[in-house]
Length: 257
Image 1 (cartoon, rainbow, N blue to C red):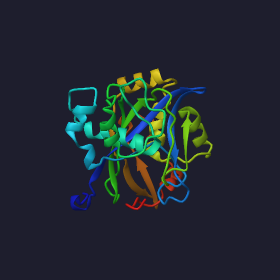
Image 2: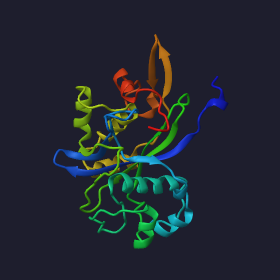
Image 3: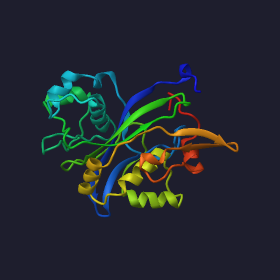
């Protein structure tokens, strides 16, 4: 039995699957991590990050969400909006005219100054991943699907991404099969689910009608090799990570990564 005293807490986190209809069909926005990063160098990932203390503010929620209910995951939803702004410069607002210029500053201050309403109704739970218990840095991450609004163009600043890409899930999975793009195991499985849709409309319907299963992979060592598995009930159709995926992740994540 695992010693409960040694299990690191899983920090609340949120991730965004921003989708649009493109020439090849459905596209989702992803970031490519720099090759210099110790954790998952060069991998394609979705925008996202930890829930901050400032995200856990019911007053901000009631003032700037288009609902008068306080859902259990409200702080995840605020964090998802904030991370979307901070990492890729996009907004998910109720108003039809989203900003097309680059805005800089504190997320909550900008929302307060413009008296914007965050669009919660058009934001759909899509996946739920929890870092395995043996690892020293753990995250409890909710993934949300959001259709791109208006004529916004993403951009990134900082050192956590080399570039932004609108990718077609089916094509990216084919590229992964041909060892042309590195993906982490949860990312690949999330793309497998998203690839069941071929348009934004289908993706939204998929999110509305499919179960979101809280999934925590299991780590084991078999014949000297590390293995990572998820239960078939998770619904991804794949249960075991490849050694190539595990090499992408590298050693256990540290705070500096």
